[in-house]
Length: 248
Image (cartoon, rainbow, N blue to C red):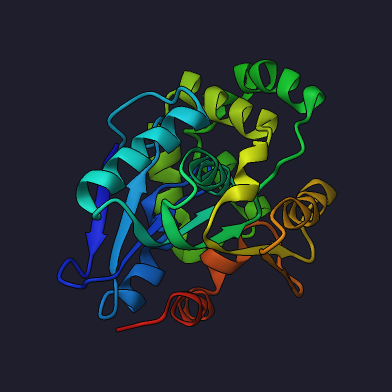
């Protein structure tokens, strides 16, 4: 796994795990805003543009990040944030090691497996994958994601760089992830966020996750779509990190 780092001289460490099909730039603006207060580490998840390994499983990504934290962050991060696939990997980290971080911010993580969607991913991408290098098609997909226009060049470059097998693998993992019961025993201060305009599966997942982790806090983001908090509201997101984790 590859890592981008900001604010390396600071004592408090925050890891931010990007969404599926994106990359470290998912949190670039937050890292720039937080680098005076925190050591901010942005991993490139396996199978994504710039990564060092093909994507295998959510569980293996979680184990690799835990090993990194043990070696590079004195065994524990002050805070870990994750969007969508990154949020699922964060949940798996908390299930595997209950004290891996002091605080966690989970945005738009699906914990309701979809057998139908999972079954359709491979044939659908078998047909559409050749189109992803066509800029008109990428622009159409990008508009559907409702990501700020400033990210299009990053999105297009990195989408073109993702191999077909990796894209299918991490999308299948995203649609089949099941929350581990052991996550309820994690010791972190858990904050769960979801957008008011997300699909019903994400909204339901957020409520179920809140029920599964009794000490968690649930926040509905008014008017926001999937990933809208971290991608389109970096200043507010950075403020949330400071409020939850504490700066200085």
